[in-house]
Length: 174
Image 1 (cartoon, rainbow, N blue to C red):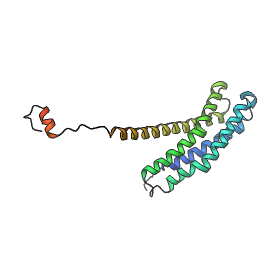
Image 2 (image 1 turned 60 degrees about the vertical axis):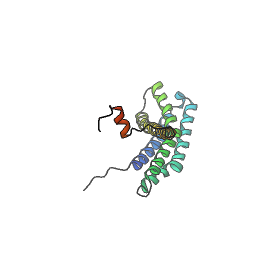
Image 3 (image 1 turned 30 degrees about the vertical axis):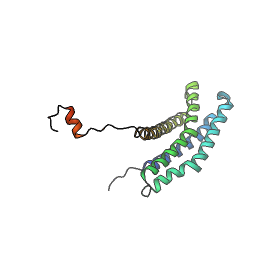
Image 4 (image 1 turned 135 degrees about the vertical axis):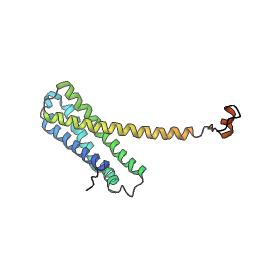
């Protein structure tokens, strides 16, 4: 029996799903119960990003991951990569990063007071890290392509056999 590692889109799909569920539970059991300590603005902003991020993830971003997983054999690799990166970017910008800032601020200011708070922050940190590096890699990939296109218009210097021979003293054969 041969072991097959799970495919990246499926792992990301379950990871993002778990993080979304943990964030809602963290709001419900921890932040909502202590809104006098944290302030209603933070608690309301937290649930707003939970709801908006979850709706956008479940309705808009997760189909891109499932598409890349289910039809990976029929898709060109660049289309599959773009579908995965699009889901990661959407999730990072509209859910993970804003919630990570809020939960990190709560943990930094009030310390850890609940196990669920710690689990949620660790899971959100992993998801935010994946999103940050996905966003950074996508940006670097795109900019490197643009740099290559702009530099390909510049004249290139090619070493010919005669050019190398002349620069090495004329009589040397390569």
